[in-house]
Image 1 (cartoon, rainbow over the protein chains, first blue to last red):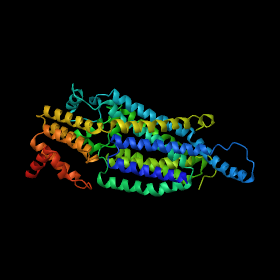
Image 2 (image 1 turned 90 degrees about the vertical axis):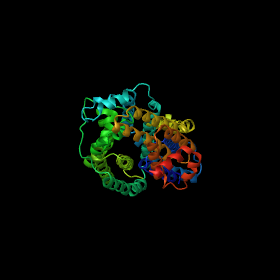
Image 3 (image 1 turned 120 degrees about the vertical axis):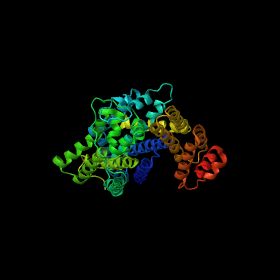
Image 4 (image 1 turned 90 degrees about the horizontal axis):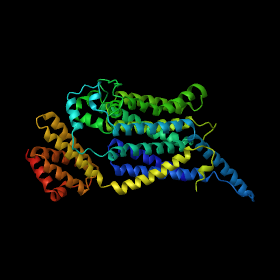
Length: 326
Length: 142
């Protein structure tokens, strides 16, 4: 029962995050902090639930207690499987990649590369941009303010993915997430395709611009130079401007562990093929959106819903136990 | 309470548990400390862009873009919480630094964007913020 409540809370949290990113209201520190606190609280609750059932020590004098112990033992085995799943290398490597991406973003923000170093995009007023950033005596938003949102988002992302992993042993949870989020994902995809559409010119990242201009640079450039935004302003380009050549491709490492599991399932193990297929399909769509879609707040919502679907599929595909909970 | 240290499953549960605890502390601390700073930060950003735009009066396109940036910073801050009076005070300060046309345009945009907000009454703001009221009147006359 408690587990079901936690699952419902997690879904509410995901839906709130979806609405937040689509309406651009998740960025204010207050909402983001609230989101982080609730996620942390849910994770602690989940750990309490997982570890409470693992301890079946002590004497068992009577028959009813022995029977109860048998029931508890089954639950304990399920919980052990969940703990084992989050301790497998794919999840650990993924978490390490998230931290690595975050550290890279921090480096780019603390020691930004000059915008004039971008050779791929020929800005009309590149000298103006250089002046704009090099101007002395102006108060740019502090580094702490700039880095707060990405740090909170990364931390909340790891915790939410853990929660999805910990519930994915239940087939009903994964099925429910597909029923709710897959249609939402396609509706958002269709809506974005109709309202903003595809880019008309693809910009290949310039390897010389290996380090980016830091957080918030892409937004300013897209606002100042709207031609770039409407012509080739994809999520990929925004990432390239903010985190440079390395950061633009580093992002793809985040889906690498999930893709490895999907390939393994589809080619070697051939068990739980449907989640692997769904995960693979959504990953492909997300890569296309990342490269060729014009960046809007709805693209963020597509990424959030897509990631939840991928995480559900990835987590369930990776279980080594023969049968999962209903 | 949690006997994580004694389990054989590795260090990941311990790290996640620590992350969760850290997230709760960080989130609560951030709510307590930084609630009021959002709007002030947005005001700083908006004033900074206006300052830059004024220096670039010859380059009309660039100045226009900078004014757009300043508007966006402030409008975003208010749309997130239109009921916060501090944000409106800050907007008035910004309108004060702008010219007639520019402030009238911002006021008009503000009124347009806030129309669908349930329970929000712009006339109340006009009473408390005379600078905003003036900008609104100017926008009506345009």
